[in-house]
Image (cartoon, rainbow, N blue to C red; front, side):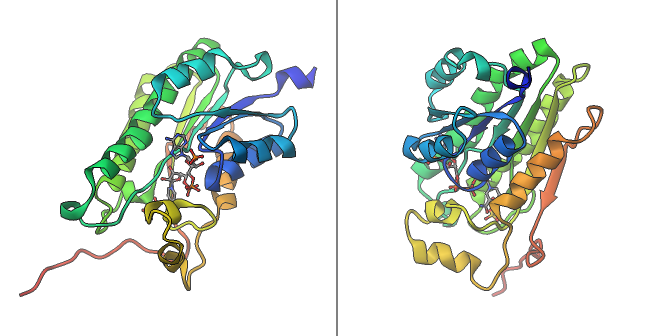
Length: 254
Ligand code: NDP
Ligand code: 8X3
């Protein structure tokens, strides 16, 4: 029966922005979705939209024991994860390194690197045992191109890029796929509100006069990656809006 053979996806950071759009797209295309994030009231809205198809789990990806508990306590219908979307992440601050907060750096590393690694570590063995699965990491163009104030945020996304490629190396000989999506300037999420710690005017200014990517653009990309034929692995995909380009090298003059 189709109900029991539906593929299962786990989306971290499903409470807003990209993650919420990805969860919705995956639910619409027939997946059962485990939606994880810290704000459970937001996840409840997703569950109400797709009753029975979305299983919400409050999760801080920085808590290793919570990740083990999440995996151990999944209802039977959601237990075998076929698609892991490692989307939970954040940027904090845009100050030069010499003025940045060490606590911000720590939170970005713990969330964007350690959280992503811990979820992957929890899910991979079952994918390999079933010889089935796709790990999709949400990196960033900030992991490819440096920019002033990108310091640790960009470094966490460079970590995601290399971790993705090294997973690919380890998964050789299995059917499990792994991809890194690297979005550029994207609106419609709370990314800049979080980066600027609730300063909504500063956040809005980031997108003024632009036509940025949207969460649906990123969710479309996830749909496309997982719908490639089984022998095709997209290693990485870099996406910018038409209004964005990589920056020029800079020179300090006297
Ligand atoms: P949002 O701030 O809208 O979404 C971030 C999500 O991550 C939220 O659902 C948040 O949920 C979750 N999250 C943050 N910290 C934790 C944590 N410790 N444990 C669990 N969940 C957490 O931003 P976006 O949708 O834009 O960002 C999604 C991903 O895309 C991030 O990895 C970001 O770096 C990346 N990205 C964003 C770009 C952009 O310009 N918007 C461009 C390129 C990449 P909650 O607070 O409820 O826990
Ligand atoms: C988000 C894109 O350029 O704001 O990862 O860092 S950027």
